[in-house]
Image (cartoon, rainbow, N blue to C red):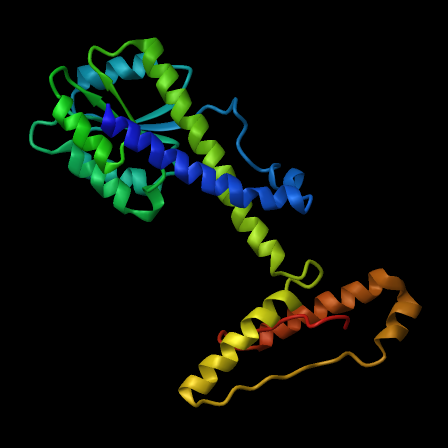
Length: 262
């Protein structure tokens, strides 16, 4: 009980932190923009089951028919690589391997960046309470005891998928918000806010290393004439093209920003 409580507390702490950061999107009015590209709650989830026993995985396959797009991996090593290379929304791991520790697989999935936040459900046998406790401490999200009830399996899987989609949306919202906060919307270059904060870091590093630091400011001559002759849309196109050429011709270690105006 205490292990499950700790697991849920860790999950709630993560979700609360993501929700707090994502609130920025509501404050600057882009929540609708950021919510357009996420999977619908009605989308069939893609799930991986790692189980070497045919009778076992066929039973689970039958239970989830129509409610999940289920892939089967009978070899735990191959299942690990399959989970890492495919965007699954949940991984179910059976404890019934003859010569492999399923908790080792859980630990490997939690240590890999690409699978760190993928929900893991452990399918355990009666009498494996000790293994379940260790699994929860390793970071599995839920477990089911055999014999598995179809309704319970479906409900627990749906809960994990819904939670993952919500947290994925929060992470994407935070990432996109940060990107939008430091990027000039017109040119795609870093904006003045980013330059002001980063320039001091560059100066401090140059002083500490006693290395030169060069700053170059460019200006478009007679830009007002472009706006007068072709309108602001024409002027915007000139700025976008100039930014594109600038990015193409600076080195990877150089920082190109829009200071303001033209």
